[in-house]
Length: 495
Ligand code: HEM
Image 1: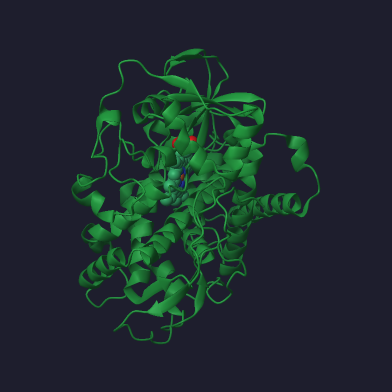
Image 2: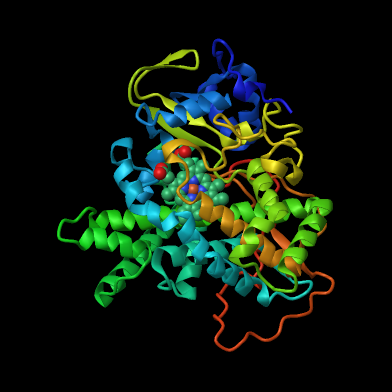
């Protein structure tokens, strides 16, 4: 294990330029067709590497320490650049996208809903959603795992935001809209030519319809809550209290923007993390075996974990961490400099686009031993066995760092651990035979149409009929399997 790049920066940063004939064309094409390969090729050219996004220059930060320096200086490196320009069109100026100057107020407003004590109370609903999902699976059935994980995560995020206001039908609609929207976002980011996206192609129309429908559903929920006049202990309740008080702190528009922002960031990334984990476990039976042993021992005959079990699901959590390392759902982000700044050996002008990539850092041999290998054991004892040991300049940043670190990190980790344990208690998921296609990055990274076959684990009998009073199963993808298996390309996935 080599910590040297993270802990000991070079005495002088090295900056460089990514090679390529006609870089304004070829870099964009590389980012669309082979983005992960392109990103991993950049550190060879420096700690800060200049690329072209169409006619624009942009800089990719390739050293973990430099990434942390950038993420800590949110005043200079503000949310902005092509990704956030696109996201703002979708989410307005909610907490994910708002500029530095408004961030502290928004974060303070929303933070309480994601504190560890509140997340702890959600363990039960998380396990319930996971159990609802897999209760009716049948031995040998093919399941669209990507859609199934979106069902679970949309359900849980929906509960945090709106309590039980999203009925199963609406939740399924939200899930489908979110899937369409994230597929369309990435190409809109790396091809920043608006006229192209106004062409009435089926993909563009699908994207526009999904955005409008998502906003309409959120609007409906807000209106119903207002009419009911009830105060609920959820994010919508917090937002309405701030909007409708004698001295309103937020506008009606902001209420909607925050809800759309949280739905979009919360459901998709968590679902991709889980789908990646199941895909990786299928390829690594020895890790799957260890997971099953741990889950069986900790649950000791119960069908799902409770809050007290979480600290003992150590290997399960390592599987989650290792999946997040190998396939971080948030793999590429942009920032915009607000002033001229000396950074990474260059003088960047105000308004410069700077990119950082958790994927690039997570796959660096300078930070992780044998970085392409799936090895949950590396997180044993906090990462001493091939993780990068943590620390202030850790290269493991699936949730970013600094004041704009993910608001839902504790929530997402708890949900992934609980869902993985609940499903693995009964089921083994297997890919049907055939080549394993590489994952296709979009605005997020992870398997988007992963179809797997359920095998009931030995000794796990078919479940009893749903008990009276149990929640009705959500209309999900458990029986409706997507036609398309994982598409065989590493290129960008777009609607
Ligand atoms: C495995 C799941 C998740 C991953 C990998 C993830 C990753 C990230 C990353 C990398 C960022 C920083 C983006 C940047 O630097 O530009 C971020 C921000 C954010 N995430 Fe997550 N996220 C996950 C789940 C969630 C969940 C469940 C929620 C809430 C329901 C959430 C809410 C947010 C919010 C609100 C921000 C913006 C924070 C701010 O600017 O203050 N995320 N997330």
